[in-house]
Length: 277
Image (cartoon, rainbow, N blue to C red; front, side, top):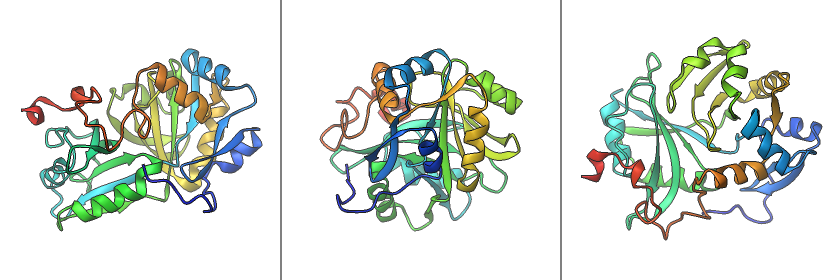
């Protein structure tokens, strides 16, 4: 996993001031100044997410789009399938999938989420989310390997928050009724309390929940609005790690890396039948 230079100044997410105001303990993580925990502590945050709804700032992750020149899903899918083992071609509009970006020898460069757009005028576009510590290397790899007719468009102007836990649906539905109807591993676009958002029913805690992509300048307003609900508490990176570990989810750079293939990592379930064959 690529690591930022030790002497490089730390980057911040659009929610940095909110973390400080909430008394978060901040630590360097993949080149960003991030909250590892809030005053109640990691165990309390872990248990709160399992029982109610936890709110995570994951804006340090890399968001980007793969845009085919001809606007066809088949073109973007073929380009990405040359670099990952998942079936991208048969992704349905609005559908999301987990996969891995692979090196020539089958080692894992990163794992990522990919979504097939169904937005008017963007039907052929694929939306990807990659890990923070790998995103610059991932983008360079994609730029070098994508065919000329598929462009990588970085979305550095977007923030990303995750609302996770058994009460996440009730919390988000109170602000945006359409949230309840989103199937698992799918997305929809709608306003949350007047804020335009790309909302997927996914996450990395083992709980039901959502990942919400919004414009960076709207992130603090959405964060505050979600925290207005007494069922929601802010959760730091410490509990995010313990939650995914308890759920048996891989962390890139720890459980998987360039020395590990998806088969060795027991990730064959993420390779659909067409690609396995």
